[in-house]
Image (tube, rainbow over all chains, first blue to last red; front, top):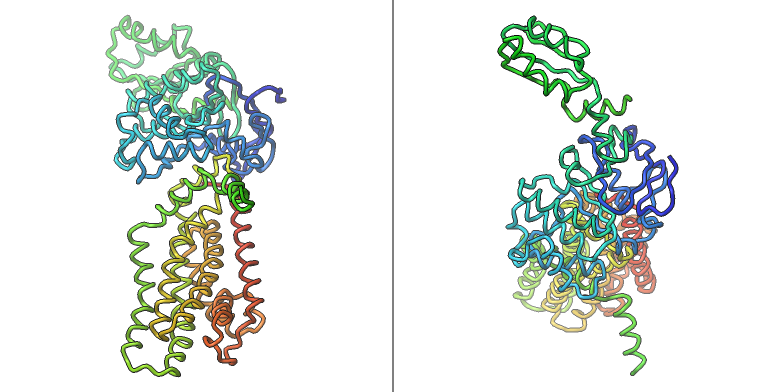
Amino acid sequence: MSVQSGASISVERVSKWFGNVVAVNDVTFEVGPGVTGLLGPNGAGKTTLLRMICGLAKLSEGRISVFGGDTRADPSLYRRIGVMREHDAVYESLTGLQFVEFMARLREVGDAGAAARRAIEAVNLSDAQDRNIGGYSRGMRQRIRLAATIVHGPDALLLDEPLSGADPRQRVEFQRVLKHLGEEGLTILVSSHILEEVEQLADNVLLIVSGKLAASGDYRAIRASLDERPYHVRIVCDDPRKLASGLMRLEAVDSVSLDRKGGVIALSRSVGVLNRSFAAVARDASVRVTLYEPLDDSLESVFGYLVER
Amino acid sequence: MSRWTTLWRAFSVTWWNAELFALYLLSVRQLSSKWRLIIIVILAVAPVIAALIQASGSFEEGSAYAFVDNTLLRVFIAPAILPFIVLGVAAGAFGNELEDRTLSNLTLSPLSRWRIVIPKLAAVLSISAPLVVVSASVSTALGLVYVEAALAVAAGTLLGVAVYGAIFTWLGLITSRAIVYGLLYVVFWEGFIANFADGIKYLSVQQYTLSAIHAVDSKLLADPDLGLIDSQTALIGGVVVFALFTALSVYRLRTMDVP
C-alpha cells in the first residue's frame, strides 16, 4: 500500500525487531483526523508501533512521518502531539494540578496554570486537582494523564490502551471525551485489545496481528467479515443425536459432529444466524440444552482468521 | 541597559526559562528523597568527625598537614566521600525516571535533549556540591585552622563534583545498575589503576581534584612524591571530561529507546 500525502500520520513499510523476534513486520498505513482504533490481541505489536510513531523507539526499517516530520529528529513536533502511554508514568508526590501544569510547562505552554486547569476541567477532575496523585484511584490517574496529554492543545493524540483498568462509568466518560475531541478534528489513534471498546470509539480500525497489519478500514466492514468466518459451537443436551439432526437442516450450519463426551459440535459460517436459531431447533426437537459454548471466540482466533484470509 | 543585563536576559530566555526551571525543581524534589539524603549526609559528616577527633588533640603543624594531606584528602574525601556522594545523587537523576518510566514525560516534549540534560545535571550539582564542599572544607579547616586551605579544598572538590556529576548522570542513563558500575569505577579505576599507571593519571577525576586543591593552596599536597598532574592539565582535563559526558548524555537521550 502506498502512502498518500495529507495524512497526519504516515507509516510506511515499518518493521521493528528485537534480536530474532519480529515485533512489527512491514506495516503500512496512514491516519487522518477523527478517531482511529488500533486493534489487536496482547503482544500483537500495538504498543511497539505506537512507541515508534511517537518517537520513543527506533525503527528497524521503514519510515514514519507525523505532520510531515520525524519526531525523533525534530522534538518541536511534540507541540502538536499528545501521547498517553499504557504505563502509569506519573509523579506520585505532585498534586494533579502540579503534574498537569508541569507537563504544560515542558510543552512550552504560555499560561501553564490556566491551561492545566482547563484540561483538568475537560476530564472532570477539578475537585481532586489539589490532591496528591499518589492517592488517586486508577480511573482518576487515567483522567489526570489524559489531562496532561491534552493540556498543550495538540492536533494529534496517540493513546495506548487508555481504558485499561477503568470501571464501566469511567469508560463511558473517557469515551465521551475522546469522541468529542475526535469530532473537533483531532487525529486520534487509540490502541485496544478489546473489540467492543474500539467499536464504541472508532469508525476506522487498523487490525494488527502478530506484528502485521491484518485489516484496515471501516469497523463495520471488518466486523462483517469476522461474522463470516467458520465458527465452532459445542452444545451439550440430553439427546445429542436428535439435536444434531435438527441442526443439519439449518442453512447456517455447514457440518455437525458428536464429541466423545456426548456434546454436539456444529460448524457454521453464519454464526449470527446459528445463535438466533439454535434455541428454536432445540425446542422443536424437544431436547433440553444445558450448555452452548463457542469454541473459537478468543481474540487470537478471531484475528488469526483474518490473517489467514 | 548594560551589556551584562542584555546578555543575562538573552541567556535566561534561551537557556534557562520556565520549562527548564520546572524540570530543575522537579529533579531536585525527586533526588531529595529521605533515604538518599540520610545516606549522603552520613557520608558527608564522616570526615568532619575524623577532623574533630584529630583537632581535639594537641596541634602541631607538621602532623596537621600530614593528617589533612594523607588522611583527610587522599583517603577520605577525594577517593571515597566525594565520588560516593555524587554517585548516590547522580545515578538517580535519570535512573529514577527510567525505573518508574517517567522519562517519556520529558522526551515527549518539544525541548531539545540538552535542555533536558542541563537541568538534571544542575539538580545533581545543587544537591551534592553543598554537602561535599562544606564537608571537605569544614573538615580541612578543623584540621589546619586556616581559611585558605578550606577555600582550596572547596575549589578542588567543586571541580570533582562537577566532573563526577557528569559521568554518573550519564551512567544512570545507560544502565539500571549505575550504582554498582559506579562503585567499581571509583574503586578500580580511580582508586587502583590511576594510582599505578602514570598515563592513566590524566584520565582520573581524583587527580584533577587533588591537583586543583594544590594549585589554589600550594602548602596542601605539597609532597612531590605524590606525583600529581599539573594544575593546568587538571583543569583542562576536568572541563573536557565534564563536557564530554554531558554531550554523551545528550546523545544517549537523543538515540535511545525510551522505556
